[in-house]
Length: 49
Image 1 (cartoon, rainbow, N blue to C red):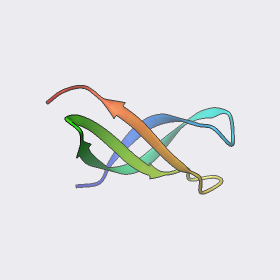
Image 2: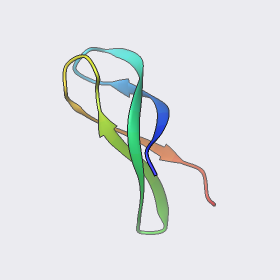
Image 3: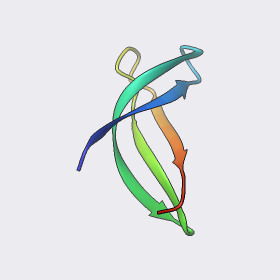
């Protein structure tokens, strides 16, 4: 269930779209993926289901 999300890359210092998987930890949903330009891990906190 990979989808496209928009997140902030700390290394590039820009907002980018990334392909990520949704995970749930401690009752919070996160989209985790990698930056398409530099390969750094990116996360985005999503709203509650």
